[in-house]
Length: 317
Image (cartoon, rainbow, N blue to C red; front, side, top):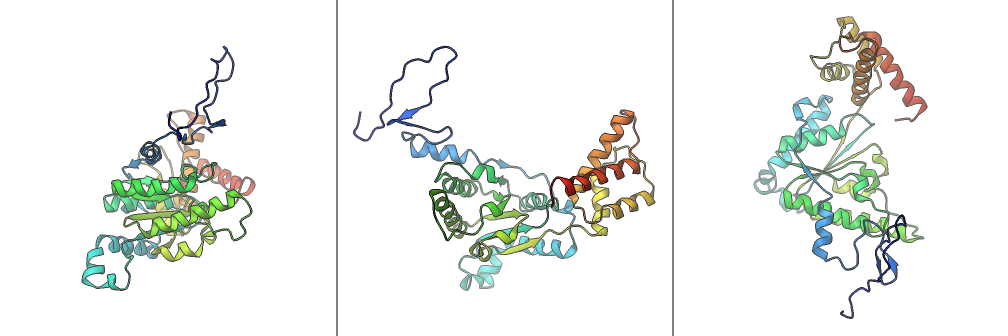
């Protein structure tokens, strides 16, 4: 045994029904999920990279229902990505923007307005896979682990050429703490610094999504080329959303006046709320009449009312 090798303590075989002993090194218990001190760096990196799966995007840009101004903003960012050489070499923008290879997009707005849909549609439009770096997969209760997971997410995106999507981004891009009083505060600041560095050196496409953009640190705001508001839909948008979310095979029985009533009754609601209402209305009719059911305006109205009541009593968007 070398002088630097960890000491692995022997323990007697567990009795039947007794707890399984946890790994011990140098007298310290190794928490579940944390790299053991004898794990090779390559194995640890491989374990972290495996957290981030490259998916094939299914949503398409043509199905994204947005106000024209928002859609135009998104299309201009796609043009920047597609025609980077023309902009930064032929047009000379590289002389004044040396970090122009970086493309970070921030989608912000109320819940249910299509931010995740848009991220997937952007990846599809660019012909890229998508890596969903959810906050739960990035954050760790062990000090120092979060920064390593952030590095691994970017490394995985570099290796595969995929679009990197951070949902609940305000949890990762929040303001750094000026009053550091404990180790967890220090870990938060380290994670923020690592994210800044990775953004500066990443030449691919990153999309952030948040319901709380006001919580972003200003250092991140400057590094994001496009901040795109995803607003609640207007009447025209809601009309399109209702048509989009009701498949042709769904046994709905609605007159033209009924369709307009749905548009009016969902004022102030998001596309996600409309989808939930469709699913709930279909479930109500199926429970009442079975597979031969007819989904009526009354079913949709009951579903919309239940959704509004939940927003008021359970949580506010």
